[in-house]
Length: 99
Image: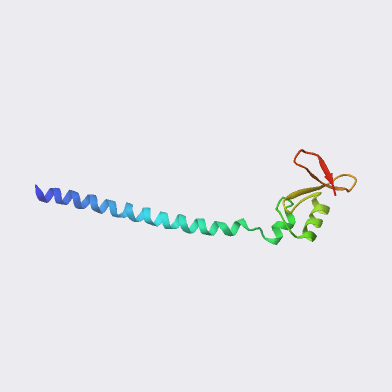
């Protein structure tokens, strides 16, 4: 009777080892995956050139995006070009502020 109990406990122990190792591996894998994801948050120069919604501090890039797309985000503000080629941004109240 004691040997059967010992055998059952041993089998249960053997079943828990792979589950435990899987959970540890999964936790380490998720931690590595999160640290790699920060690399994708920094836009490449090519992405900045072709996406006017990415904020930039580069005046030349901002000017080129205004010409190409009619809008560009520069130092936290989105600037637009109207049909008369005048540059403006929207104030907090929604009014157009021309530059």
